Image (cartoon, rainbow, N blue to C red; front, side):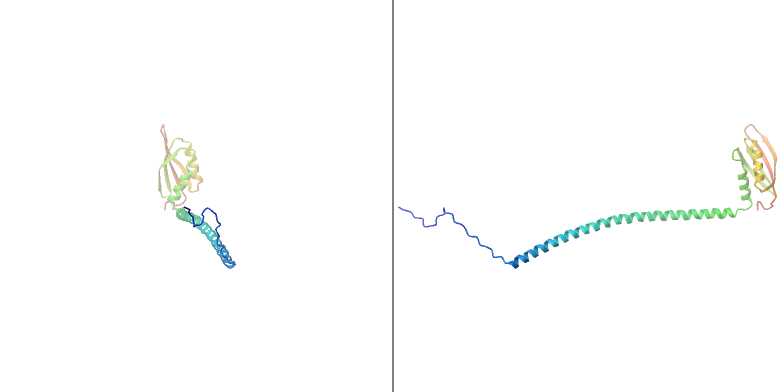
Length: 187
């Protein structure tokens, strides 16, 4: 019996034909324009994101700088208040100094007359009319004449006399009588 294969032989290779696409020039131009536009839009978007990032970084730096400047402004205001307070205190002191009269001037002159190198301290100062009695102690009796000389040179007293001196082994008690030429020293 003979068999005949009526079907086509699969063993023979045949080339398949591909369909050639039909491309128009205008389609290619539109495609090129679309690709170019997409590329330009991508580049522009990338550039704008960079600009936004740079702006945000600059904004953050400027906010930090503003906060620092605000702190400096607060410190300046604090120091201005301190300056005004000190200036008002200085003004009060200057006013009080210019308004000094009588006993204040007397005490200032007596304090300034105390010798700096000797140990001398005062215990009382009394005034009756033009006579002022100064009582004090010293460890070195040689500071008393210096004190008396300083009192005479201050210009407030007409005469300074030693009334009494009592010596102990540790200190000497003294009293001075000072006569002022001005009746209104303590007024």
